[in-house]
Length: 619
Ligand SMILES: Cc1cc2nc3c(=O)[nH]c(=O)nc-3n(C[C@H](O)[C@H](O)[C@H](O)COP(=O)(O)OP(=O)(O)OC[C@H]3O[C@@H](n4cnc5c(N)ncnc54)[C@H](O)[C@@H]3O)c2cc1C
View 1: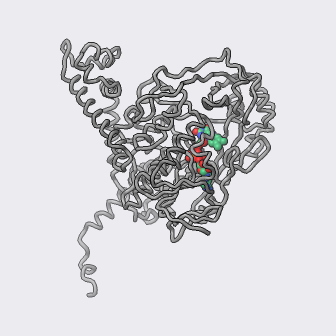
View 2: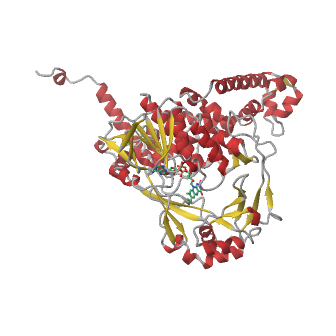
View 3: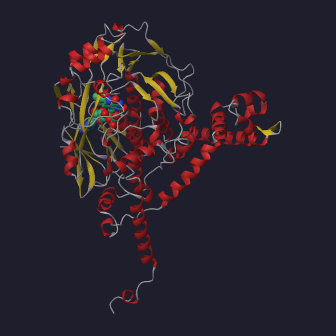
């Protein structure tokens, strides 16, 4: 057995692990990133795309905190689109098709170039825990990595099996082994482990697809970068194509449901409701005679095409028939069959809001191991876990963002407070303050936290200060200058009026608001002022309940008026504030009132002068 010593060990170089390791190393922690296969770093297991509704916001937030995902997709994306531009700015979300291989290679290069970071191919089989604290990990090849903090980001790999029709094969992802041993070691450490599933569609050879007559989806003419530090997108941009399933496809699927692992009892764990397999869609929505599919290129140096929407674990002969029944795919050769993966995850109510496990000090979890699904959700947790592991070693309080500040915070708060019964994905509807949590202002909301942790460069920080000064100057100007008795801000509030028109009519404003990002911030603030100020009032109330901290010593079982179910749930989750307590499912406002009264009583008791007899011990 050989040994080495690090401050922090990160297990798994997927989307969570890369962010966690980079953040930790950049914050000065001697970090090791151990992963099963270096050629699979930041691999996109499923769709070759980053961003999309709510996920795009997450990527912008990761960037503002000092993460890498946005920069890597900016360097390797091949079709950028801002989606939902027909709706209000809170719904605008950046999305980009990725060149899958280039994305992996770019992230690997960045990890290799990182000071303080050892990148090594190794499979971790055990977490070493002594006296309730993590001490390191052991690998299959007999090496022990001692560390003061460990971050597990093992994705879909723990005790995973792949379902190809009736065939069940051990594996974490197609062509890659499952991680064995680790789940058992987590159970030994006292953690509960449970199971989820997800599926992926077939990929076909683009040479054999007939794109003629298919609807074309073009990239935006002016691609907008994900990262606040990217000036422009230089890569060639390519289109996607749209096709549809049809009654013949549905008939093939229906005729074979008795061979679908989903319906034979072979696949029993819960999958993502929002991203169902095609067999599930056809069975659950019998009245629909077509479902939309996107044919997405997997990269510039390959002809492989991803059939987005055709998620399936049906047997391979059925996949052949199904694919060939679809317009454009009549003669398509399948290069990789669709399949489902079933894997262990660690229910996230066992985590603190810092992403450290409650059971084992110094052990952090991020990404799909926490029951989430998606690269962006993983990256967002990864950077928070990396920052918090490093802060812990620095003796600092963890970074815990509020639901009013970031989608990242909504994601983590939902996970640790409510847990999840199915793979959790981010939606705008989950964020109650989404009017303020926009992709366009992630830098203004979060960059100061990245800066505090040393993850934002001087140059980028200076640009933000300049942007803030310009926003303030433009806002002052339009609120003070009048035309025909009305301020420019009042004119801007008119639905038909935009900042661009005002700029054209006013050279001074054109100069002040020459940066489109500055103009956009002011325009949104003015046009949506009523909604935004209402949301800010709600946030004030939210802040008040979040600031009512619950002391760690509080023993819920000792509160006689509290219902049994409430005692059980509050003791299990151990919320940090009354606000968090109120979000636990099954906890009623009446339970919160009981806890408040009890806390107030205890506070008075502690504040009261001590009775005479106990203040004179020994008499
Ligand atoms: C078949 C399939 C279908 C999917 N479908 C969807 C979908 O429809 N929508 C969606 O949003 N997401 C989907 N995903 C999930 C998406 O890939 C993940 O959510 C995302 O990649 C999670 O990121 P992560 O960093 O947590 O884990 P991953 O990207 O899975 O990375 C985990 C990394 O950890 C490494 N690792 C694991 N165990 C060990 C160990 N013991 N020692 C060392 N290294 C280890 C692995 O080699 C891997 O590199 C799918 C995934 C799969 C496999």
